[in-house]
Length: 175
Length: 322
Image 1: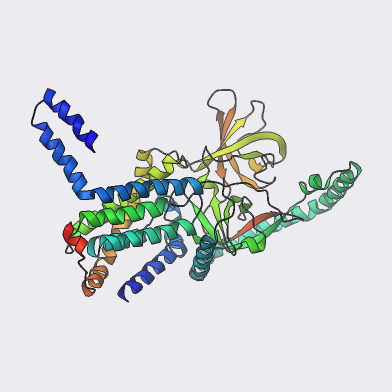
Image 2: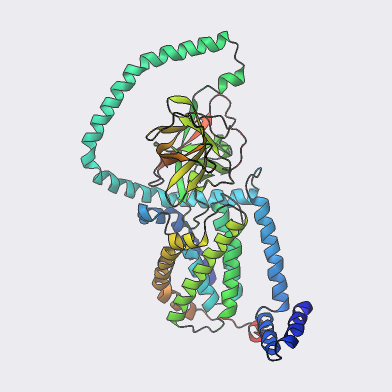
């Protein structure tokens, strides 16, 4: 039941991202701020829940992002969200990560996410920007917004995860 | 894995014996972290995803029904969120623009006077043109290429803000409304993009700001001087302008000219406003000229867009994404 509510919340976040955020971002920053809020929630799942949950959520919502805004190709978001959700879940297995660490994870995770997407588009020669330009142009400003969102949802997310019991599977012990 | 371990072994004999332990530990921690099974799954996933991306890249026939279902459902719900937000934002804009209404009214009155004056002349020319086409025995296809276009009004349902290289937005017209892949989409000011994917009740518009060297370029010309020719090839992110290339040396194109699509490339019909020339300079090899074009569309405040559909048979040219 708890998980269903979470999925509904993320779905709502995804819908709002496409429908409301364009009005909130000032026109001059349209190309500079790339909010990826659903990914932050995936990172929270990776750190405070379980990496498999994060993998599934990442794959699911990445695929949703890919299908709904299908311009060039399917897959970049599915791959990077799923992979990073799993990988960060693998690195941080303790369930009581502090707030500062979580913020660092949010920023580094978002940076990795943007870099992977950048790399995939460069690989398929969809874009030809230099990484340095992309970094200064939109990655750094976006990371600020990502950090801000991660801070805003920190307390509600911790409460949410504390209220729901974490199931330690056998595989968890193995790591 | 075996090979990887053997290489440093031979190397360390030459350098010093301590390094072998370090290297081995590094390799071991990597494998411990990922595990053999996991690494295998990761590699398989990587290959699978690269295959998926490769298959779905660029032109594709029809999208599959699960995609249609998901896209139609999601954009339908998003529209319910988008509409009130757009209404509120529009109201705020209108209030702040209230002062300019008087000036705008003046300007529109002058424009209207121009139109009424030109209308009589236009009708005569259009009649003559039609008669000449009959006399010269134009085929149906040739006639159709000269017909004006139908504009289908479309509401924006959502905008992609989460991906800088895939700037798309969704509109509420789809296959059922006769929308085809590759049709141009315009705002009041000028061309915005083209339809990249068509679903049952909705479609995705790829913005022209995604235009890159590798994509299909648009044949363009100067408004009023149709012998001018150039190709709009890419969008320069750092300056926010289109790059128009292959302009001949004796071309009349100059700063301040309005650039419209010429219809020669087959991607875009002719006469759609693309932007204004802000700079003309010698191109890469010194043989042709290059111009910077400031886009006519503002790429902000998305409300209504128009899909340009050829008149008569609603058959769009089966072109791919830009």
